[in-house]
Length: 313
Image 1: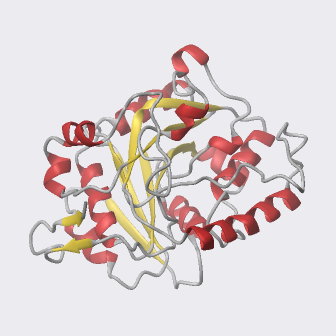
Image 2 (image 1 turned 60 degrees about the vertical axis):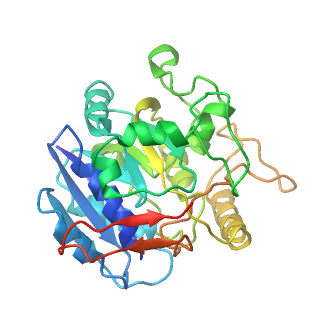
């Protein structure tokens, strides 16, 4: 069984769409752990609506950015041997979990990274996801491997790692990656439970957004584990805005923490006090702990019929 762990903080509209996409999965032998960082917008109402999902919820009192704490608590509650970490606001394609299962069966000793494609501002409803979701995405999202744009505060389109490293997801040809730690995104990632427990989970001392997934990957790489970058488990990231200045300050603090904790030069990462460690990603997404400023509208509460979450053009 696969355990899907979704950290959440005050994004019940995004959570609803993320769970809708999970409920559309063809593969059904999975559970969902919603790990709440002390939300005040009642995500338990969203969780209660999904009676067709094997979903559990765990919560703790909010005390600053707690994404890593949520991920670790979710992993403790999980029963599966394969842990899929999925951020709220990430919409999996309908066969993503089946692809993860297929990959895990042959790579149970490796981390498995799915795609992470950035959606532009667009209206998304549960009906869209249940119906012609792929057609809607293809109509609005350029999928040329050479296409990317720095508009809208970040890269919108195909996973930006594809532009940096052409063929990175063509794992059938290129095999697995040994030096991957700066390119592992924690928002759509499978970690075998044995590896997760050996590494001690995510570093809960990192209480700011930015690079916390890279820190986990650094420890995995230090321990000798490899990673598979797979094209098929696609996570579509819903667009929303955030304060980039605050974000970069947060990431700078985490970079200093990572530098103090790890010998980056030993890992072959070029690092110097006068140059920026390439952990700051210019992304159109926020972190688990930030409130979205996007124009989200919900017509009715979960449990009273299908709510409609919209992101205005």
